[in-house]
Image (cartoon, rainbow, N blue to C red; front, side, top):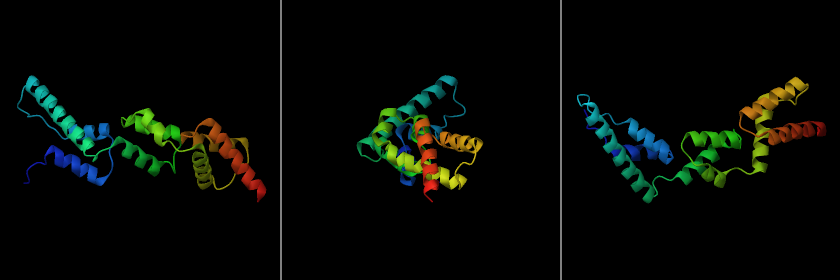
Length: 167
């Protein structure tokens, strides 16, 4: 049986696979710690507290070495997901992962890029423009679920109508 990995080795192993935000990496590293089974409540709490301090120290060291960067994580996340989802969905997902909204605003896709993404998504899903109000509402709900705001959804559906009239 191999000895357990050190905290730094586990963190480096995780970061070697993909980018992580600080809060998400901290959560993963804290989950790996198991206090002694035979310890009383106080000893278990002390062990968890000590482990959390060690995790914070490792995260600070990795951030200082630029091995972990929330900015780099947000940028790569948005680059990967912005071809499928709108800003609202991206921001909410990052918020759930512990990323500050101000950081998201730095890397937020432009409205032109977002409009092109919305048009591409609705065309890929539905193949043809809406023929009835029910179809139009269905397409609008789809885009809203994908995280596009109401104004952008209307512009995307209108752009699709304009595109089909030109054909």
